[in-house]
Length: 475
Ligand SMILES: *[C@@H]1O[C@H](CO)[C@@H](O)[C@H](O)[C@H]1NC(C)=O
Ligand SMILES: *[C@@H]1O[C@H](CO)[C@@H](O)[C@H](O)[C@H]1NC(C)=O
Ligand SMILES: *[C@@H]1O[C@H](CO)[C@@H](O)[C@H](O)[C@H]1NC(C)=O
Ligand SMILES: *[C@@H]1O[C@H](CO)[C@@H](O)[C@H](O)[C@H]1NC(C)=O
Ligand SMILES: *[C@@H]1O[C@H](CO)[C@@H](O)[C@H](O)[C@H]1NC(C)=O
Ligand SMILES: *[C@@H]1O[C@H](CO)[C@@H](O)[C@H](O)[C@H]1NC(C)=O
Ligand SMILES: *[C@@H]1O[C@H](CO)[C@@H](O)[C@H](O)[C@H]1NC(C)=O
Ligand SMILES: *[C@@H]1O[C@H](CO)[C@@H](O)[C@H](O)[C@H]1NC(C)=O
Ligand SMILES: *[C@@H]1O[C@H](CO)[C@@H](O)[C@H](O)[C@H]1NC(C)=O
Image 1 (spheres, rainbow, N blue to C red):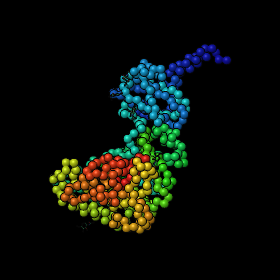
Image 2: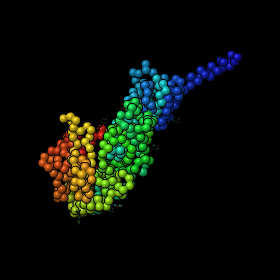
Image 3: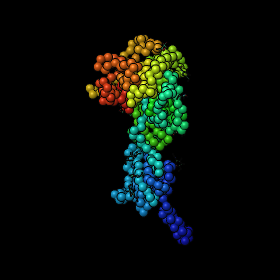
Image 4: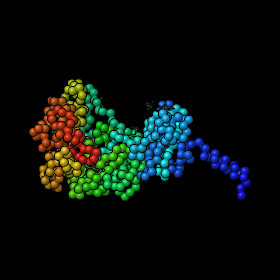
């Protein structure tokens, strides 16, 4: 038997515990909880910022029927905000979409957040005075280079835009034909891709948050971080991207890809579809002189490995390309670049860049297959494919004939009109006229309408979409 006084003391201590001040959330740091690691009562205390607004974000970290509710008060006198306090001007609910909720506003004297109905659900909370730490980035997407039957070439969303090249008179120097890349960003954003078959059951059940997606572990789910990438690549003027080659995929399968930044922010997903098992063309990528080329080309594969880059392509292929580019650059500089403004919008450097992209796109034909969404109904467009017989003479003079039959995905006409728009008329560069000859060598009407001098308004609005359909080759 305990003496009564001790029981009294114990009850004082235990009672005192229940009244203890709630857990203080750290500023600008993630905190993680589950229902059973929450304080009792389940209230988290929010620090006040030095200045300005706070952003509070929450992310659910597992699938489950449990949907916790997060009720926040930015009035320090409402210490345990509940559902009945909603409607008070200082109490808010962080409504969850796909497992993510946020609130931004002033918290002058500190505040509190109740977590109701948490069950055993793991979740993260972040309080920041510098914008949201968690985010569902609606306008950021990973980017598909191309697929083969069992591989995909994928890129992170673009970041760190390079400075545009604007040489000026009297030292108007254009980049050499064989480009050397500028140095990449010194502390690049850390991106990870999560790739899973679109049919995977994990996909529908998991919240779209970084902590939840990082935890999706199943045989058919791939996680690849920056360290498993091919490194950074400056594919185009949108900026640097991490580049990954993914092997071991299943033919003719629809996959979903999320990109995740620093284990906190999640992109919108894209889909891609692997080619059928018979698809024979290897991917070509990482060519400094053709930075945008990242797709399957009708060329024999390298002697070792399965993918070509600038070190495995034969000189007989790359030398003529670089020679054409060099000659073009030489004749471009006979124009008084930087002195004679032929356009208020563009200069010789833009002309060279557009020409490079066009030349690379016609020089390296692209192999493809009809996109699954292609032409199923009258409203849907059809990919710009052209059937090529085995050993047909390639349109590109320095590529040897390819032994298998394949479908060539024609360049988008816009690769050509971009050169037309960016170069001095005296260069004599001409694109075929859409109404007559263009559609035999270009994909016409996808991005732009195909009417002369009309931009936009095409049937798909883009060369490829986020669902994995590819309409024409934009390089
Ligand atoms: C959750 O937080 C605890 C400490 O608060 C830490 O030890 C643990 O690593 C965190 N877990 C995750 C998944 O971040
Ligand atoms: C704080 O957030 C409110 C919206 O909640 C916004 O109207 C206001 O401009 C923000 N103030 C600052 C300094 O960011
Ligand atoms: C709480 O936030 C709301 C919305 O931003 C704001 O109108 C209100 O003044 C804030 N309350 C306090 C005590 O600052
Ligand atoms: C935060 O929530 C608002 C709606 O309340 C939304 O418009 C905004 O995009 C969200 N911010 C982030 C970073 O998701
Ligand atoms: C001209 O510009 C190029 C590239 O920007 C630079 O490498 C070179 O040093 C410059 N030459 C002179 C004489 O300024
Ligand atoms: C392009 O330049 C790199 C070095 O900058 C060199 O290794 C490579 O051989 C060149 N490529 C061609 C096709 O000339
Ligand atoms: C990048 O993110 C991955 C996965 O979240 C992590 O393991 C790695 O340590 C991070 N690298 C850097 C340099 O932050
Ligand atoms: C490039 O120019 C040189 C010199 O004018 C010429 O001999 C060569 O044939 C040209 N090459 C191409 C591919 O046009
Ligand atoms: C891949 O699957 C998604 C979801 O079912 C679908 O919306 C998309 O159209 C599919 N992509 C292709 C190219 O079939």
